[in-house]
Length: 307
Image (cartoon, rainbow, N blue to C red; front, side):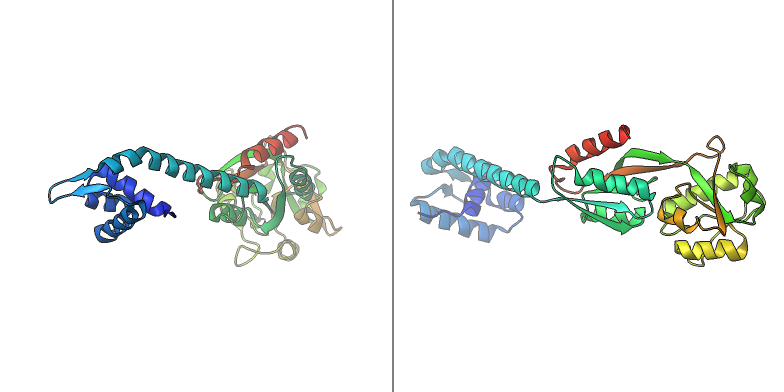
């Protein structure tokens, strides 16, 4: 005898409610197909499960005897599905992404740490900006990501793993190029570009507010769209004598653009300007999380806490 598990679920709903309409609402179907499925189940089992009259629905002796066995069967089916789902997620690789605009040395260290995770197999990618990484996390295309703070989506949780100082890039003949360390006050009355390539718009807005509060009011865009490449930003620094505020990370992709003799990359005194933060991030609520997510977060946080 073959029994449809869906019909068993329908039987249990009617047995719990003792009312076909309420049971149908609970199952998100209409009463006629529910009644039909119960009749088919009764035919499969060889006896009536319910006594029905105009005012009342009652379990027959057969129905009463079957309620608990059916409940146990459905619980076991649910447990089987959970076990299978867990095993599938355990086998599936953890999808990890990182912003391409992190300092190169940190990005390389992060990729190495991901590759050496003991908790799971991984697939690593570099989608682009931190905003793109966050979007992939929320959409479910990534399980874990490396982003600049602040996050661009309130549904993102994170743990800080690195902090690095800010700096400026100027032409080699700029008056500021004579300095080996600058303060934010040195930037007053200068046009300061903050729209370095692929920047998180939340970061740009936050940096602009902080600069304005410190008396740096000539905050500009290095490109008309605010999404210029590193090369375009460098070209604008060269042609317009701008000061580009960037991460002081000489080995990063942005830092290397400004490492040529025609530019100078200068750190900002950390007492005058707080540096940037990088964090490992994940979507707070997106169905069931990958079973290896929490162990991976702990492993990566441990790696960078000792580096």
